[in-house]
Image (cartoon, rainbow, N blue to C red):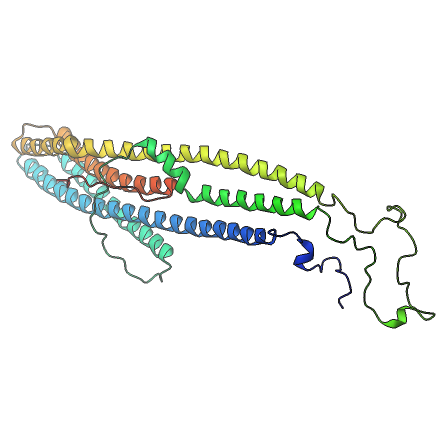
Length: 356
């Protein structure tokens, strides 16, 4: 039912945008939409990879925590035997034997908790990888996080260039700029004012048996006599002004997101630097000192030169220091994942010396 002239809502594209080169804006707008969608895809990938990396480091910590707990339980069993022998010979009280047994049983229960936490992390991995729940996940490979902290100054610039959230917003800005350019063309007059267009209906619309008049015979109340039914200039002017305001707001939002990206990078870098310093402290001095205290206390207690309170304190300290050292290793790996997520790009990762 097409007429001689274009109907409202059915205008062909060449009538809507009659000027040369304007049609290319439609393709550019689609291109910006594709960029925005691709960045959203990259954001989804980044989120999944970051979650998987963090789950890996948590699982590695729980597995190492299990090993440390089993080793400490063996030490408690040995201490319990020493306390029992000394009690039989009158060298200590029976309360000491009971205290060691209580510590050992509490640690055995903590070991069960670690095993359940391992299953929780494995379940999270299966969720990320979309694998069935009966899939078995083995012990993770023992890896060491990078032992360096990248310079903070260069990360800000890299985040502004590579962070996917910022690139997605820039694509939105580019899309809206092209929409405004199209809208500016749409408010200009077409080649014809469409004064004499009418639909090519049946011939019964003319003559004495005409159902309706060929041309309007009356003027609408809100139009002047002789004016076209379609306004000439400015019908999209209000929409155009609104879109320009929205574009300005979007650009300000982009500046806010860029400043927020700096904060995200700074916080992630701080967590990495903190974990790196604490892990180095445990690895270089505290672990060795704690082990020395444990050995000396055990030998002294067997010889009757060290009190039970001192030896049980050295055992608890040994357990806490070992778990804290492995927790900082895990925190380093998680901090690296968070930092690369904040920057939006892989970072150069140097390798440090193997931990003893």
